[in-house]
Image 1 (cartoon, one colour):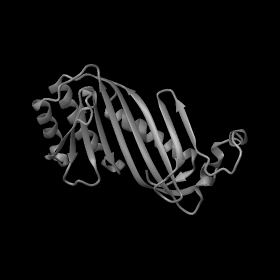
Image 2 (tube, one colour):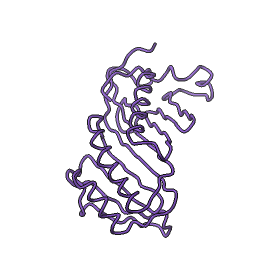
Image 3 (cartoon, rainbow, N blue to C red):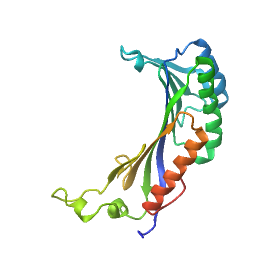
Length: 219
């Protein structure tokens, strides 16, 4: 077993995407229902903006941003064919409230806009700060000698990209934090899976990655 390494999450970003079975029109009733659902979480009318930077309607969206507080950032972007929720530095202690409020917003979209969910994707990106151990040592056991010999030259960092059925993980060197790791976990879920189920699967994935890397710290 690799030696245990103390670590802490320096920055994280969560991105949830649900695609609809058919297009919806983000009309006034839908907008009002979303604001009503997210209002208690600090979303306001002043945080809304229209994103229409391309001529393709599929790329248009109405973006709802949390303004109270504005940091760490939270947003919901609603387009004709999908909804995307993002959250910076979301702590697991906040998970229950986050699921309740944003789940209510998604339900409002379904009920008011007539949107049926086809697929759901959950992505988390983590910058993990390591303490008292070089990051190359933490990931060295992930690659075999044969893997390391694929190219000539000095190994700068032994990282991996692993694709599995409806899931993937990237382990790389963090570009933003000295002696940090960048972890990206992606998993696809069916349209009828609950947000609670998605959260439980993500927690399991994070714990598994930390265990394989022998990292100790609060997720």
